[in-house]
Length: 164
Image (spheres, rainbow, N blue to C red):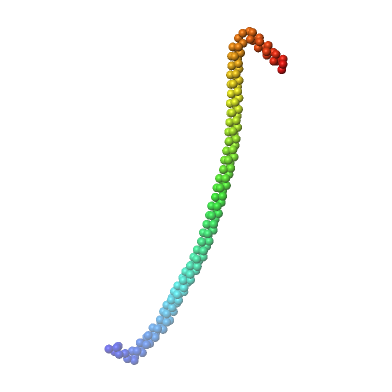
């Protein structure tokens, strides 16, 4: 029970041993512990600062990405516009070429038709001429079967020749 009722000597030695332990802890333990806590606090603060910088960089990158996307959209729109203009120009050129070629083909076809028509008319005239000669020959043979009729025709023809 002596420990429950401490005496002055016990308290004195306890205070001295407590002081020695405090001095040893202060000399060897608290400085490294406080240094570790300070280092830990600094590393946490650095991490927070680094996270803040990363957040700001992300905002800057997002703004840059949005700008790049806007430029890409603008370039895409320009390319599509150019492609439409080229397509329309090609269609217009093709229509022009087709119209020119169509006109040339129509002109050629008309010339061919005219040539064929003239050839058909010439052929028809030749056939009519041949048929007319055959008919005239048959008529003359039948009418000039006698010598008297032949002599009268020759005399008529000679009179016509002298008059011309």
